[in-house]
Length: 320
Image (cartoon, rainbow, N blue to C red):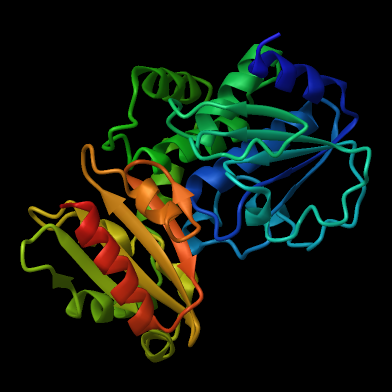
């Protein structure tokens, strides 16, 4: 039995399933979570979706987004816990700390560095997104893909492929997206929510960050920082910064783009993006993080100045 078949068999047998993903979620994590939860509920399972972090504003209009629970740890006992898009169990933010000993953990992911923490594991680094993997699970298992399920899964694939612009835009991803549109995915609604739903305060914070954009002497590394002071000045928090890194990545000649986000005086969240063969997942792993070849991240327990110095030194060394 293949890993996919084991996942399908486990989900079909489970009377109750909690669906969850990593902290600080983006579109793939939330779209895949909601798509799976709504499909399993439609199949008669007792199901709920969880995440330990607040939802980014751009994802709040996804079908079912208002039902995501932030109960940490999950107090309800489930027969099965479906963990999506999460390379390491610690990245769930403590959601599973109180799970029953007999519960089955199903780990479905597309990160090559996944630690295979589940009772059942299906890790496919060739997949574009967790949304694509959930799509394949539902199709293989004969689960219904309703309009709301299709909308969430399309959003997941769209966001993790950079609206079908990144190198992970494979034929399989495009075929899945096309099928989801045929099944009623609300493409215009998704696009409006992701790209046309900005709070004016986001632009104030972005302007502050971009005003401080810096580029290395050789032009191969560029970075911005989002400080606590800037967030206070703009009147909006870290949840607004998900897409900021894309502006840095768009600078001509840049091979590694970095966004430093100050969470506290001793904690900095780092987003990394790259082009082509440059593997920023390896760079993130050096600091306890992870991700994909062209999109990764990590968190440093250090002041902003120290975090910048360490990451930028590593980035420069990596490109030698």
